Image 1 (spheres, helix red, strand yellow):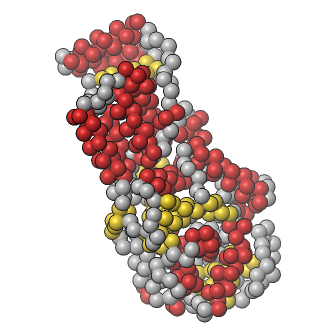
Image 2 (cartoon, helix red, strand yellow):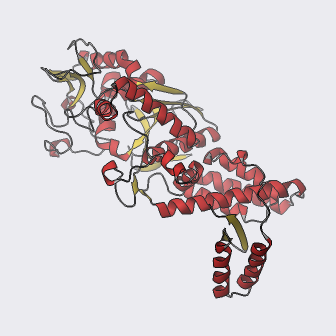
Image 3 (cartoon, rainbow, N blue to C red):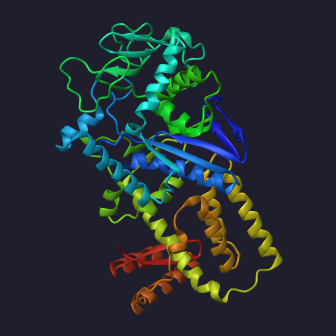
Length: 472
């Protein structure tokens, strides 16, 4: 199996520390608001990675954190606390906001068909392990205290700082990455533990050796949770590309400084962004959508999952309502094909030797695609090629379920259709249109399609076949 490793900027053979066991850590959500379709892309591609590893014979221990603690927004050492922002917005406590949106996150991931991690860790339940890690760094001389502000990591004492992001520390100006705080020794230094300032009256607060009222910085949580559950060196760490220059760079620094072991992570796997109609998702632009928003518009979560599979995880993806509509039609088409296979496989003949060889060839091609840096678009193409091949219905259905171990579309749950019979006048038009297409009379074919649509049906061309669907 091969994965693109951000650390080396290369696609590499995946070799875990202790095969067949694999340790995998994923940065989880900050649960201060609703989980949106951008989150769904990231965590669905994590799911594809886990499914592929397990299918390849690895035993995966998958850990994901839930950031349910107040920390500073974005990559800053100063600024607004996201949890308190959420509490103000929804008129409740930070603790209630955290539980409400943690539950919503899990609900959204379940709708998407994503398998839950082996361990899901709330940051608020790992405060002591974070404190222990900061104290370990302090004992090793990697920290300093800014009075009234917090405990900071001194990046000048970690020579490999910025290796993941290919940063030039000397070239970084104040404000280029994070807001400069009075008392910081270097622009790249970052907060490990923060102190409540006078008059703040924060809702989430803990005692520490440095301050009676304090709270963790953003980056320390992932190192503490990852090392507690997976050890000081982890095989795979996933996250968004926006985490490369600061969050993951800082994770590496604090983890390797504490453990003395390099690398902290062997393979860094980063997902690209999902934009909406060419723009960054934002409530102010009215383009912030959840999975439930899709459902309200009569789009199925599995249709959205199919759409996500059509783009490689490292490519930027643009969500539009037009391509969502196309994905829903494709999903309906796939379900129709499965319903036909369910009927036909009951009377399916034994495959010939040629069909057996073709099935094996398609299977190899499919798994070669997903095991080559999770190339889901190529794997989808193999699936459609297989469905239009000369294989028997029984072979096609068996391969579909095999492929779905990776895709996670719950294809086994699709049952034979119990749809009402197609009205005679519609069936006549479909038959007439078939003749028009065979004689390449495209004008007549288009006219007949319009007449079929006027009678409440959509017709989808799939090679020589016409698939008829009741309009939604």
